[in-house]
Amino acid sequence: MGPSAAVAEVRHAVRTCLSDLPAGELVLAACSGGADSLALAAALAFVAPRAGLRGGGVTVDHGLQEGSAERAADVAELLGKLGLDPVHSIKVTVGEGAGPEAAARAARYAALDRTARAASAGAVLLGHTLDDQAETVLLGLARGSGARSLAGMPERRDPYRRPLLGLRRVTAAAACAELGLRPWQDPHNSDVRYARARVRHQALPALEEALGPGVAEALARSARQLRADTDCLDDLAFAESGQLGDRPAGIDIERLAALPDAIRTRVLRDAALTAGCPPGALTAEHVGRIGALVTDWHGQRWVDLPGRVRAGRRDGKVWFTSSGPAR
Image (cartoon, rainbow, N blue to C red):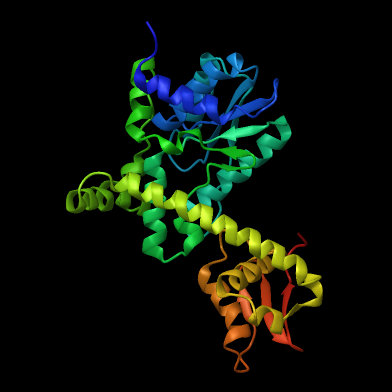
């Protein structure tokens, strides 16, 4: 008897995602023990050897909940039983940030980055689904975060790949049930003190009730369309940045002023990141204040940015200086 429709869908998504990797490449599945990432890990364990790849796993213990170390050990053991090898269990310290969710996410990705480099992994698979994408878009819309945020999560950004981004969360849960896997239910996912939990359990259901079914799919579809547009604008801005000369020498105001707004803001954002601003802390408001040095200049002082970076205007140029650690 063949696999259920849900299991087959998840395996097909993983197989398609990995089709460009060379034989023998190591692929790691990031797994929290939840249904999405557990279904992903099980699919990788099935697909990898049949595709000539090596499948491994990694789980991250954020240390934010009682018993998290034991749970991470249980997840690592389960990944090994699925047939993944090597399996990494990483303990991280969550620092302060814009909020607990953002701080935990930053610590998690830093750990995944280190693990992927140390293991020479060709890809790290993440278990985000279409529902996660819809929630991300809705959060970005509510925060007024701009087109890049509304474009949601990319299917690929080295070394990360999201095979399940086109599948619903219920498909991953059904796959786990069919395979006899018992996912861990993260209490944070239902804690409405967190913005994403409120979107998941309150905002999206309310939209579905008011507008009819298909809201999540429509939001994910909008994200795909916006990502194509924003990627194109990013490429144009990257090309323009190359024409603006060496950043330590400042960026010419006249050339910046002549650029379309969509390109200019991207050039300035890239310059701020290059100067040392942490990507997760640099907001559209910050970039807008830098842009005002070009388009709304009336003698205002410099702009203080995250990461101890400062942007200012003098001698017909925008300058970025940093008092933080060298990047």
